[in-house]
Length: 375
Image 1 (spheres, rainbow, N blue to C red):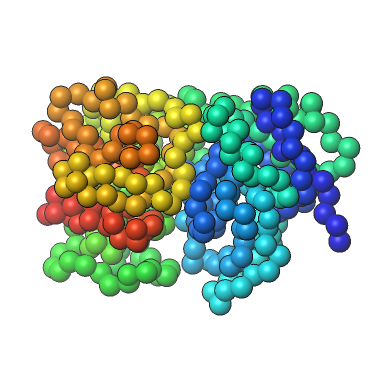
Image 2: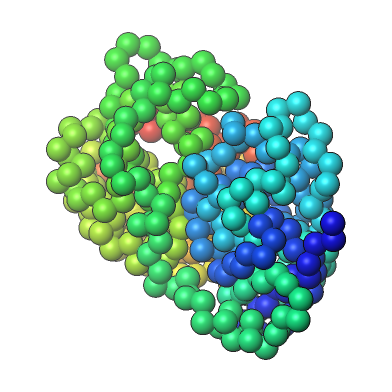
């Protein structure tokens, strides 16, 4: 049965026609971004850091290996929608339990295919990430859709962590995560350090890696205060990834301020930005962000180069770092800050995903570093 027409309308006035995919007849809106990874579409779509965003996949064929419940990073699709050149009608993988099309349908997520994703990426690279709407149906009014795109809330100043954080604390121990793990053995011997993970939109694979490296983890909601964290008497604190503008997550910044020097701290992505803001640095919105699985990062202490997975639209201004903070990593694509460490307190963070394994294990040492810091 033929699927209806779909229109992607951008706030710059451009409308692009294609074919409806996903939940036909649904509509979605958000900030249009692009990801250059050749695989991992299910992990990307279920990553809470993509809340409020519509993802354009640069790889031309998406959905080839279907979907599996082992590959989700949260309990639902978090991205608002997706844009692809071609959604594969064929699923070929022994682990697949369904197609990406059926998964999108079950989650009520709309998308568009049959468009020139290379053109879209060139537009986003030159003009920056922008707000958009995807609508399905015949006789759609492109001008009206553009106006609706212009009314989508800007990512600047937007705190999205309440939409993705856990509603109640929960514990993850050695046997707490039973899903597939590429390295299932658990490191460390003796007592397992207990850490608190502040959930700003935490990915499940981060929890897997923390458990793998010997931690017992208590996950707390994003708005937990420093006093609330310390009440759990943790050996360390982890600041997770998450969506939105880091400067808008004011409660988390205040929480981090109250924890510095009291407990060892490790942050990833939004957690990196929150730690930076807590010590007095500033953040800014990147033109089109970093989203992909092959971003080179240099470790300034060792000189080593890591192939990293990244997903963020904001960055820390290295010129704003105070004297007690050193930049530990740099993104070699554009020289942006990719990691920091405090010189007067046990705290460090990185602006990429060491748990995502694109290297595949280039950055796994960061979890060992946190374990050694916690003791």
